[in-house]
Length: 257
Image 1 (tube, helix red, strand yellow):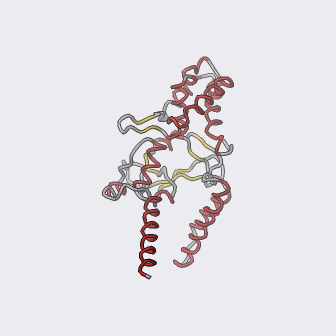
Image 2 (cartoon, one colour):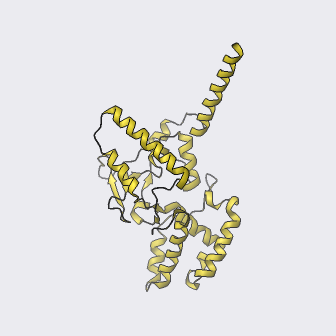
Image 3 (tube, helix red, strand yellow):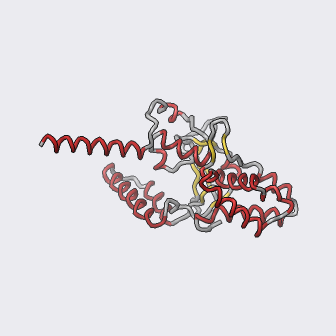
């Protein structure tokens, strides 16, 4: 579904309801959607999905009322209750796969495949990083996400900060490809990353902050376990700390002068 990012989740929920309402075998579709994780919170770790906290309580209830007015169906009545709607929202928020088919993402992937000398590779990577930062100021962080979809097999893949597979849309449409990044032995778990490449390079605490807010778990992949003793600060906090240190040192130097 290729809707603007801010509406893709809502439209995906509407499509789910419409699909069941129009289906001859409604139970088959309900069973299919029930395969997806729809937890609104992780009680064991006391984590609540970031979109279901008190901050958005009023907006979520208004959305439920509008959703009910437009699409209510007696067969799906449980989806329109406050708790059922939260569960439906969590299902889409946790499992919805951003469909990245922008021409820019295709160009970046082509650049990644180029065989370049180290210096040129660093210059190109720096240019691409800056390009994304500049465009993000205007379009937001979902530049390469033209919609959202539910993929049963892809949603079964667990997360790792050092994944052995990745999802992509090489045919520039809604068809998702799951590609191995290394040799995977028979019986070995296939893991993808729920984080983008830039997020994976951030501190363990930063990575887990994103995962806890969006996917309700704390990562225990080999990379996170190896960094378990690192300071519990986000990458942004680390940068701020470094900046404060530099400013303090500069102030001392000015005082000495």
